[in-house]
Each structure stands twice: as C-alpha cells, then as structure tokens.
Image (cartoon, rainbow, N blue to C red):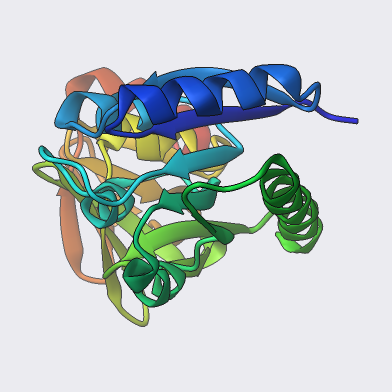
Length: 231
C-alpha cells in the first residue's frame, strides 16, 4: 500500500507528541511536518505534497479555520479538537473527519481508513484537465482548457475564465507548477497565459479577449517558438 504523507498542526506539545507517536507506529503514514499554527507553518505546509493534515482548532496565533482558509493544497483534513461545537463548521470546510479528544487508537484508525478511501476516490475521479482550487473558502473545480490567463494579486492570483474570475491564495510560482506546461507559459512576472487562447500578439504584449497582457523581454523568443509564429 502507498505511504501517505502527513502534517500535524496542533497547539499542545503533549497532543502533538501523542499524534507523532501514533503516526510513527502506522506503516502507511509518514510525518513530514509537526508544529502549531502560524504564518510560517502555513507557508511550509503549502509547499509540502502531503496527503493528510491533522489539524487542531483552538490555537493562539492562528486558529484551525484560518489555517484551512489559507491552504493552497488539498489534503484530506482530519480535525482533532476537544470541543464538539466546532464539528459543524469543520464539515462546512469539507474536512474528512472530526476526532474529539481524547480519541482512541481504534477511532484514529477509522479516520485514517476513511481518509485513505477518500484520497483514492478523489484521485480516480479527478480528470487530468481539471484543477481543484480553493475560492471563497470552498473547493472549486476549474477546467484547465477554459482558463484565459492568470494574474498576480499580491499574495493571491486571479484566474480569469470566460465565465468568471477566481481569487485564490497562492504565489504565481506555486500556481504555475500546477498548470500544464505545454499549454501555459508565464510571459511576465505578473501573468501566465493559456497559449490556446492567444488571439494576437507582438513583442510587447499578448491579446486575449481584448485584454492586453505585457510580455517580458526574456520570454519573447520562447513565445515565438511556442506559437510557431517567428517573424
């Protein structure tokens, strides 16, 4: 069976240690990160290719829901909380399971089994032409072929499609890595374009649906080659 990579975000060092020990004993799990919630830990977790996230809710610097809202990855999330009152809100975030502390090893294993089954199901159903992103605290499935361009907006990116725009918490570098490199190119520090949507261009800008997008000088030759339109 595949080894599933995990991260723990938990304020209590005692609870963190307990989870670390349980995960260490499970041959199907591998721990990559363990800490309390913070801006730094959120940034690190977003760079990791984790399958499961064990997440506490009540934490002093950043609570669990704020942490969830800041995720740019889509792991199976298992909430670990001593307060049952957070369960309803947690499931509104589409979490996989909610473990009420203190939980037994049997209950933990049941949550892991559920997460593994869900991870396998998501992988089977996810078409290669689709991209799952988080927009307005909800997971949204984007059709890659329908993306016109992507624009940098500070700590966010704006994904522009023919139907609507999506504001997603992500760096341009991170989002660019998730796109099909054959059809998308970053032509400027602030723009990624879908090559199939380019209507016209010169060596200063690209035009897509009446939107003029600047081209970095360093990208002109590569763009010429990709569009097979060398002057």
